[in-house]
Image (cartoon, rainbow, N blue to C red; front, top):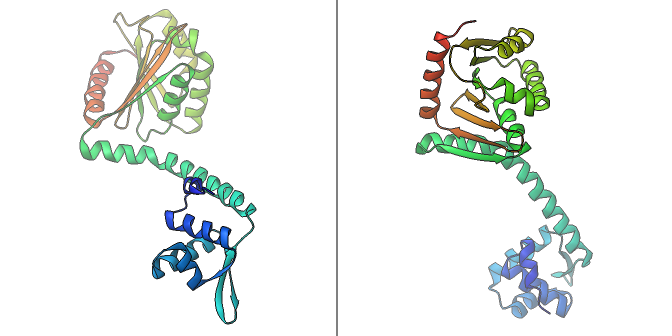
Length: 250
């Protein structure tokens, strides 16, 4: 019988060999397991107790000697289910700390981290990432495009940002539409300035926060987004924003 598939469940070669030995020969004393499996004494004992720890082998005493036999084969399925649960929990933990790992890696190795998204995922993930900002959020935005093609997501983002008390400064073109929009949507956490520049209809929402800069292209039939994490790229764009900000009107 080929039990090598058990290795896919995390068993080592020696553990598979011992499992196969006990399956074919029945319960055995330690010396017999060593002899039948062909493993070295110390390694065999280690593997046996690894299998006991996994719940696949049961230890008892007969004639004052250690005796080993397989647990019910049903325990294999239980063991695999437990492995799946552990992997799922580990995956969640890794996902929660991965942004910090990536951030530290990029800063240490001076490599910009770039993430690319398409479709509805682009707006959702990029706005969610902005809500993690420790600094204020700086933004150039095409209000007309956002209100036309992403109004629901934008409303949710504004509500979540206000709830988390994240401050935001926005630069937009000086148009009647933009002035009317910010007349309704300015508060203690949101400040806008209007610049005399041809910025309307560029279909981009650009945000600068922490060591990141993000872009969302907002069109009727095509949405894409990028997050770039690099302190130098963020720094120069922050300086550009501050200069444009200084030329705008409240």
